Amino acid sequence: MAAKPQVLEVPAPDGGVREVRLTSGDRVIFPAYEGHDEVTKADLAAYLIAVGEQFVRLNGDRPVTLQRYPTGIEGEEFYAKNPPKGAPEFAATTMCLYPSGRRHRQLVINELATAVWAVQMNTVTFHPWPVTTADNDNPDELRIDLDPQPGRGFADVVEAALGLREVMHEAGLTPYVKSSGNRGVHVFARIEPTHEFLDVRHGVIGIARELERRMPDLVTTAWWKEERGEKVFVDFNQANRDRTLAGAYSPRPLPGAPVSTPVTWEELGEVEAAALTVWSVPGRVQDIPDPWEGYEAGVGRVDGALALWRADLERGLGELNFPPDYPKMPGEPRRVQPSKKRTDLPDPEDREYVRPKRWIELHPEEANPED
Image (cartoon, rainbow, N blue to C red; front, top):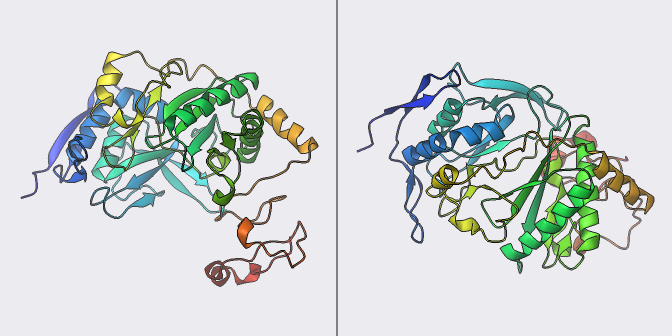
């Protein structure tokens, strides 16, 4: 028999409480795994309430995409970019522009009750944009994802992250680090919202290439997996519009209920990322000083990173590949996997790759564009 609906009392911004109705609280979202207890929907709501102050501080006032699992992480998932139906009156939204040119509203988590309601809607992971509602076009966060390729472990990611920290400091940024909730780490820095997404992406590429020069045996910026080897990939495409990383203190849909957890640089090499879970993180938040204290105040400028990008342009290095669902961008290399590239045909730099059949069906007018 399903559990009776609960009414959760959640702290409100004005010092009062919000009542959030939770149904099917006994639904198992994370099955038990290797010594980790199962996590139910009610457990997930309790976790967010326990870390609520830090969660809202670091993810609030931003458009957020919800990664939802109606039957738990072993079932079907989908990403909700439109606010789910039935959103409470107190839930804020903001209008967003997408690479396709479409616009629509996304949810904004400006208070804890909205996040708990999102759990009622079976949300596991929260993906906030790197912009605030005051300016949805100019990022106020520069984010870098370090992704270890097969053959590399967490210790290798830590080494790359410490090198990245040095490059970012030299570029005039103040980096903060968190576990990804999986095998990698995320490095964030606050920036003044003076440049749009493409400029910030170029700044990230400038930083990534400088790190690759300093650590050529460990770090790669190669977009194609077949060219990365056993290295740590700096995922520059996470800096694009409508590309997001898991929010700070957000659970990840993986066995054991891991959490993308802020840590200090000093503890990064000692932390066991797999031990940072829905069950353990609330105690950590209660027992230790905030690892990201001062994050909002450490606002830098993207200029130093863009100087690295411009220096690479002078060296003859240009644009890198965009995600496959993006339109062809100016100066972008051909979107063809290196091992499948035809060498017996002319390859002018300004010609588009052959579109996939399904894409051509949807966009017949652009089947073979001449850029």
